[in-house]
Length: 109
Image (cartoon, rainbow, N blue to C red; front, side, top):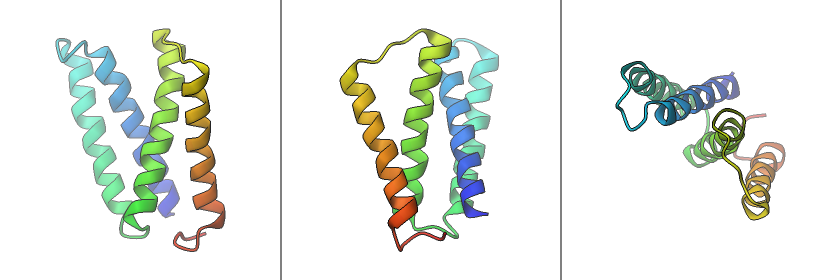
C-alpha cells in the first residue's frame, strides 16, 4: 500500500509539472490551476507515504521516477529531445531506484 500511495504521488507530480510547461509561465489559467492542485495532491500523498517509508527512500523514488516520466512526456508531448548523456543519467536513476527497492533493508517489501 505505501508504494501505491507513492506512485500516485509521482503521477500527480508528473501531471503538475506537465501542466507547468503548458501554463506558459502561469499565463494560462486552466493549466495554472492544474499545477497548484496536482502539486498539492502530490505533496499530500507523499506525506502520507512517509508514514510508512523512510524519507530518503520515498523522496529518491518520488523525484527519480518524476524526472524520468517528465523526460518521456517532454519528448512525446512537447518535442523536447535528450542527448546520450541525459539518457544514460536517467538510466542510472532508474537503476538506483531498482537497487533501493530490490535490495535495501530500509524499505518495506
